[in-house]
Image (cartoon, rainbow, N blue to C red; front, top):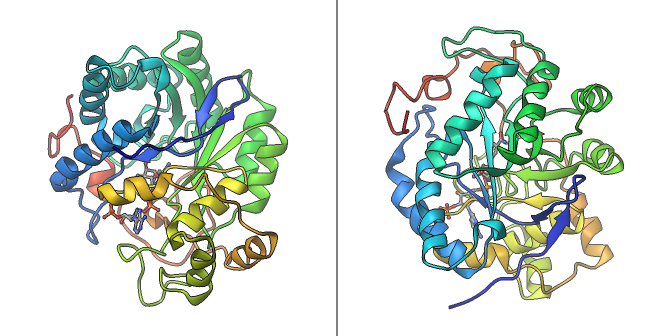
Length: 339
Ligand code: NDP
């Protein structure tokens, strides 16, 4: 069987994090409905990923995948494929659990669903606090962060971090915390370089994890009006050809060379291997400069239904929308989760 060898970066708490992980968000359809139909394929792909050498798995309470991740991981440990301490498992706390004491409740629930004693990293999924009913609870993320520090102290998570924090929010958190976040997980891809945020975090020893690393490059995400580069972009194709790699591999390698961790999602076995086969070449300076030119600030993930809530981290755009139910209630909804 093919094998990949994924290097690690050092977190500010001294622990190692593999620079590329397997993302487990199955996504939602155009009507913002969640479907579990893709789970069997994802289970197969995740199992294959561990077999070939992935050690970092990114999941979240929201993703409904914690029970599946737990089953697969525990089976791999039982079968002797991997040891628990070789894995790096991340989960996230959703908007409903932002009171200091609720963070521990959320993490313990995640551990029960995952059937694990600890996670390697737990993230505050977003800085806003919103109830299941869609009410703005206006809880300061500094209060929530104190809950994360407790979870760390209790050993339920080995490292703690945040996600979707903007520059101002990172500055405020770093100025007001006992334990600094180990990472900030945000959207980064060729269109959305986030240089200021990445530079600030790097200066303050907070690693950046890029979600949606392909942005709108891939067919499932690209629309007629979405910006270049698409997979067939001539500049990208020429660069990829030069190194004997694919356009997606060049993209992930570029982010790695920027010191950024990536967590691409794929349910396609050949792509599981392809995405992690990026550690045997270096991009030339001239190519890095060409890739940097695609940065135009375009966001793939733009949840306009949260933009009037306190601590929404992105710039606001015209438009209004109710919060999709699939992002508010799922335990009592499709009952895909273990409650
Ligand atoms: P990605 O950028 O990983 O894109 C996923 C899409 O790319 C899928 O359609 C997949 O297709 C396709 N794809 C993957 N690899 C290749 C390849 N080599 N060639 C061509 N197409 C490819 O987007 P995501 O939004 O899923 O982000 C990745 C992960 O980040 C998520 O799974 C989740 O873990 C995390 N995330 C975190 C967020 C947060 O708020 N913190 C928000 C969003 C994501 P297919 O599966 O059919 O192969």
